[in-house]
Length: 493
Image 1 (cartoon, rainbow, N blue to C red):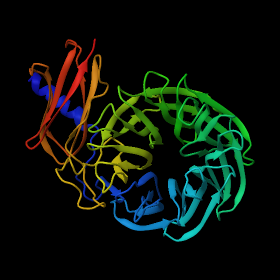
Image 2 (cartoon, rainbow, N blue to C red):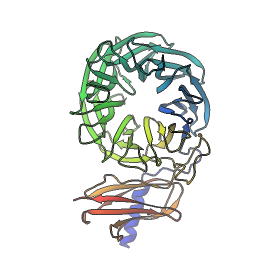
Image 3 (spheres, rainbow, N blue to C red):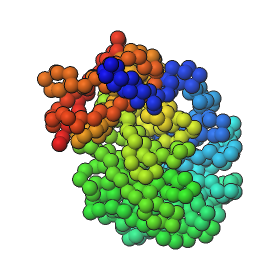
Image 4 (spheres, one colour):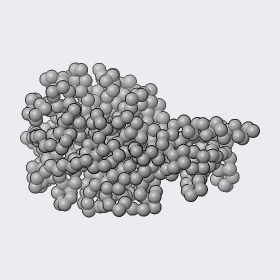
């Protein structure tokens, strides 16, 4: 009777966070695009109808890249695609949908060398009609556009520019909806500064995040949040965060009352993801760091309807392959709710994330599932941490570069690991199945059964409390009729 009660409680706990993966009206999926050379994807956005606009740059037919924009239905069906470019490289780093406009930003090479690039901004309608394109040259070298925000009848854009005497600087532009430059502002130190990822426009300011006062592109510097007057683009204030090593803010988002900044820090014992929460006046509310024994970083984040923050990044400490995508979910008070990984045996990278209702779209690249050495990738996951199955989980390769796949049987690495008294174990099922989830010591003796019963398709979580167990290495195994998977966890007192 006691054992039955424990199992019933475990089943209730495990089922609490599940979301159906077998609903074929709205499956999870991933898609890849590209050829035999390097193809990339940095961002996606959605419209009011839930359609996805996916910005890529591709070397198909090659050898140089053009910007390629896709419009996809929520089920992954391609509605249209548009290409922009000429005889040199064009690269897309951000896409923003504003009413009936789709704005894609990036770079346009003006010569064969990457040191000769202009900011590029291209505008289509949501129907795929080409409206205009715009380029901006600071006059002294490399320019790159990484963030776009639309406020009323004004487009704000920000990114990198080369200064006449200062190396790299932040550049902020103000552009009309028909593609005419209103104003521009360049700001930075005598050393290396940069503006990265999406920007936020508030009631008073344009907020830009990046790196500040670094000796070079690859060394040192602090993460920076800078505010510019939204009417004049005059610099107002900036805030820095970091330690003695390399700290870079790669991405930012806002919820109307706060700003959230994410990036990479090397200053606190490893290569980790940092997440910062600011008030609109620049007051730091809290900071948190996540990572394991490998290399982790993040470029983007989004806020769910309940205020939770989803951070998309990459990890070598956890996951299936050499470098996997990681999705972390934080509560507004900075407590980590969970993290999930996705990937194959090679390298997968996340660059951009957008939330649409209960789903998250993650843009990046894959070495495991494409046609070449690096292909553009778009994943439809859900905000509860459920990812689509990979073709290798299904025991097959995609027949072409447009494969769409449903969710899978998958056992995740527990977190935290190592742990002290309690950790969380999670798994995903592609269909309803009877499963067991059991814990074993290093000698193979069962020490706990966390679940034994039938579970619906979807994502499930089980807390493992080990207060009575000694320190050591343990194994946990998820088994069904057709699948089994085992992972290792470490208990430290």
